[in-house]
Image (cartoon, rainbow, N blue to C red):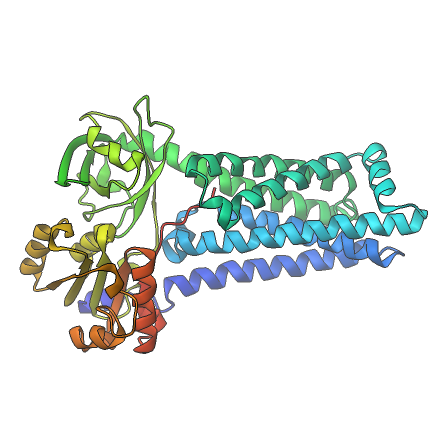
Length: 448
């Protein structure tokens, strides 16, 4: 890396700055919510008191959840959509359990006060209190969404189906908010409490609206992408070239990906994540995809001139996180696409390890070799059966990795490929004690 690049590198790493800011924000709001709870006063019944506190924390978790899925560029570029989505998943579990606790403790608390059974108390509350029925519907929707997001269900659902089910979460959030307005003790306890909750909910909603609707619409109206060429790279791999207006103003970086919608009558509703397979040059964009399903296989049938709606760019798999002057890029299969783009963008000496089953599977290899020759990089194609990925003595095991790249400790390592290969490489790097701050891996993981 050049001295100028090193001089402009921020003193605090972007990912640490973003994480610190996000969790400081969350911690501050937990403190505020706890203070508002104390200000509202406790109930004479312990169960009701616990239920109210759980409800307030559940409401805060919902607002934080909206922030995580808002796809705000500042957070996404520093943390990465895969990590944000992982946090989104765990926040979802938090919401489920806090709202369940809220329901159970409130119902049993009031049942204890009125000397009724819990079921009778719940029926009476739903029949007589404004907002209870809406809250029950909201909770039922959240249960359905949670079930659809479980691993066993997620593997069996198409992304579009899962995404459609997830959209009902927004309806549940609206219902939960109206319940809080109608019956929330802390909401009505003081003007400061009411102002806080209105600000929290409106800010969270505005973040989602800005990141998920306004920004994508504005960028697509500005850039007006169209397909300019469709090139077959291999029997099951195709590259799609796109151009548009003012692409020099698009804030895309090598290593990032978009959610692409090709506006034809049979696929306008499908959004697929594909990385840029070439560094953005201000004139065109390119993706390269392998035919892993009907959607990606149909890319080769796109016609020149097809309009494209692209959401993004997304991802933290970029050089802004590079810590060392030199780099090691490890790719597996079609994971070569962001790696090939990064090879154009990374300064310093670069080693590329390209893991494929056979030499014929090494797509974009001529381009890689051309780039390597131009910039003095080293490209090694590692071929062999898939079983050679996992064990300690395997092709990308710690011993072989150190043998191929003896100075791996002095390099940033960017890894992209199938989950098994990526996990194996990350294990090898841990065993070699490569600092975590120098290891970068990102998986496509989308939140609704």
